[in-house]
Length: 80
Image 1 (cartoon, rainbow, N blue to C red):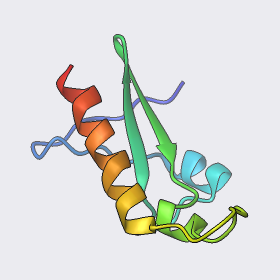
Image 2: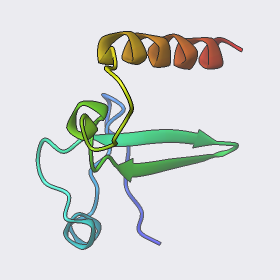
Image 3: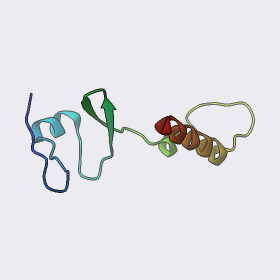
Image 4: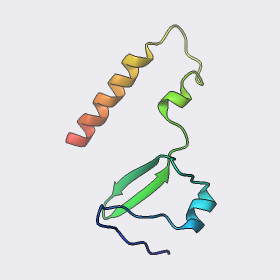
């Protein structure tokens, strides 16, 4: 276990050892997940837009509508 300190802005610095092991670079995005009393930080390998076109579907898809629907569901989940 490695200890880090929270600065006045609420930020923490990931230790070099962890950044190197997970190949985290400046500008990479991270997911912050509250799991009960724990905080889980995971690198985001790909965004939804990065994944666009990787799954075969039948017929034409309205990606923007699907994305908006997913965002609405996330908001509803957070509010409940």
